[in-house]
Length: 405
Image 1 (tube, rainbow, N blue to C red):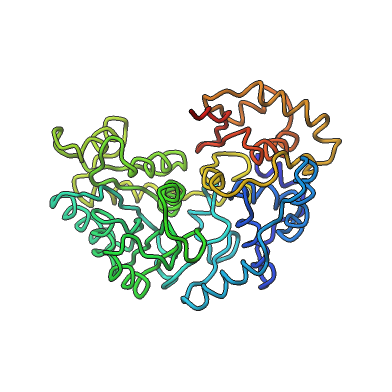
Image 2 (tube, rainbow, N blue to C red):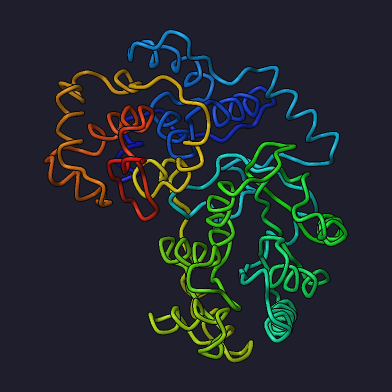
């Protein structure tokens, strides 16, 4: 579907000049523009600069006169801060962008990186788990990370205390990547400051968040999709039944990644999530050889990079993060497609909303129900997303937002 959407629009080209990178940063930092909407706009207008020029008109068409894209001076300030901190920008579509992350439905358009590039060039495995990990859990994380590192795999985790920190420590010499919830220059938790410095020196830290951003709870679910997206497989070592670690596991499932879990004692609350994953079909991990056996099979069939607007047409964890930005202008994308394609946009708005409810529905199914093409429906969905009338979910699902009480 993504290829079909691109077929009638200008060819995608990643930014190669400083002004292009500035425009990409401005667009992704503009209010209510998450990665999904970013790629929709880019596919429609061809360049980030053209999309930025169109945003006020999109807002004006919706009756909002005051919408302003992210200011150029603030974007330049972020770039200057990144340079001062030793961070570099990594953009989707460039040779340096990891193929595994490019293959997910909602790849981050822009990443900030600190450290060496080498870890991102090797095959990657994510090891995640409980912050309040047991002694046995941290030992297991270290053992698995060391074993995988010696076999040539980079270990990806989230720099949290517990399992994450143990996995990073054990793989410093062989290659580790810490995906940050806040800015790549903001260490959280502070107890991992020394570890974070060592990762920047020997491995790699990266984040899609703005430089200098202190992480909040809402930043971690979008971060988790990057952890799983980078990796060929996700290994869970201790996780409660309703823990944040299981968000990463769900992201991995949506992304077609292999999920593995270390079993635990039934009465240990930290094992409930792992045992549940194994019950539901995750590979049981006793030692590193169990992981290597699966990885060999996965590397025989690596994921293929998605088109730049894969985020347009399928799961949109990303715009959940965009919801926390200030709202732009409500109905916006009425001008994102030629009138001959969208027809009566208000009528199509109403038809889409009539088919959706609070239960997520596959966008592919919505397209079939409407008996229209993706190129007709996608611009109208952008409108509804910017209005807040439609909410996207991982796995290519959309719904009406649930009422808040």
